[in-house]
Image 1 (cartoon, rainbow, N blue to C red):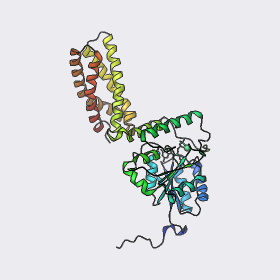
Image 2 (image 1 turned 90 degrees about the horizontal axis):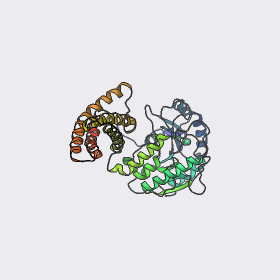
Image 3 (image 1 turned 180 degrees about the vertical axis):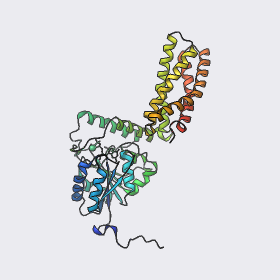
Image 4 (image 1 turned 60 degrees about the horizontal axis):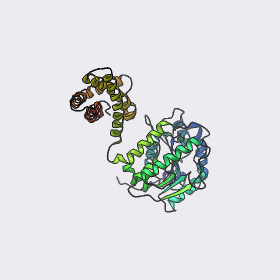
Length: 375
Ligand SMILES: Nc1nc2c(ncn2[C@@H]2O[C@H](COP(=O)(O)OP(=O)(O)O)[C@@H](O)[C@H]2O)c(=O)[nH]1
Ligand SMILES: [Mg+2]
């Protein structure tokens, strides 16, 4: 059979225009907003070959079904429904990979991004020579709308942190509203972290050479329907993204998290050790008790933080705790042995405690990553 690049009957015959731009909209419970968003897109994108791809993480409010219903009467409307998945950044990546358009726009599904800025964003990358056009709240003409002072301050700090860590001077690298040329996106793709909420900063930091950026001011609108998903988790994932984009090149972020948890575990360990010694227990008994408590502490914190994506629950959590104890037992033997040996040579009780802990940490990470939290 011969492969032919052009189809006999163009898929977009109904629209006559070739596909020029795709709007990628990540959604989580936005059923109250999608219809209005599509109407507004139809107005501002009239005259272009366009489509909108909603990437919905199986919203409980039926967003996917609604989009499919709307898609039956308009070839502009498409859906990617993900099951058992979460995350705005990964949703955007999958939406971009699901479209053929040479220019991509990313925007929220809650009408907070002003669609009137779309033509300027698109033109900037289509004909204006930019590779990315960023809708920005932080230059003249832009604004954060009715955000509370606390949230403005938080966003400012996070923006500054991102600019410094990633060495970018884009005024609003946290923006979720931007246009990008497909070829520019594809160059950044192999190195994307796709962690958390902030895909633009990820793309900017992952591009092998600095992208040509245009900045288009817009006013962030207030959300009228549905709920914001921002919370502590968004902040934690942002920090993780920054870590992955900086030191993550040398040390895996998961190991860093495991060691941070271990670092906290050291305090737990030392607190227990100190108390037991204070009660007059011999060092070997005090160190043993400290190890037992610290292992449980480490397991639970690693389970909900380091391995949040593979979190063990119910019986599997108990089984996981058992394997973690078993793995740690060997590490603990070395831990107690070395700690006791150091205690016999050094007056400082805490030096002995730390020496024991360090030996166990690396062993624990290596073994628990394949046994306790295996994929
Ligand atoms: N697919 C997907 N979309 C998400 C997820 N979290 C948030 N969104 C969508 O991303 C956009 C921005 O989220 P929003 O909660 O409005 O963030 P805020 O504007 O910073 O408060 C909205 O369209 C949400 O529906 C997610 O985990 N998966
Ligand atoms: Mg929003």
